[in-house]
Length: 99
Image (cartoon, rainbow, N blue to C red; front, top):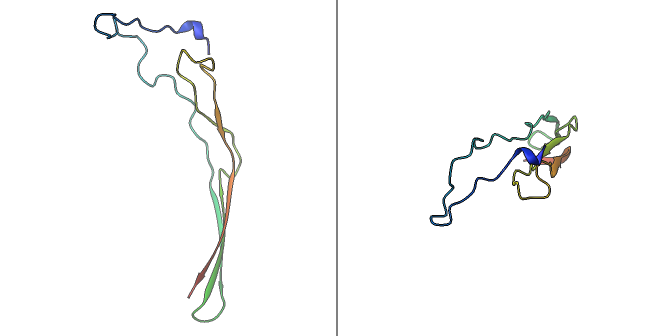
């Protein structure tokens, strides 16, 4: 992103308010949206008539697509226009004993 294309609106020394409104609307600089595919698999096993065991595996962002975030929109920041975070795949494994 070209930092020279943006400028801060000056403030009045008397009131502390902006001298004029800016022409860029709020939240007009947004990062790309997340792209997630969540997957889940479970297996129920009967141990006895009253006892059951469930094994489960969950994948969040199962295809491991890079989801960028943390877009710096502060024009005074040295990292203006850069992404500072990325999401990755998360795996969760669990077991449940039902009696």
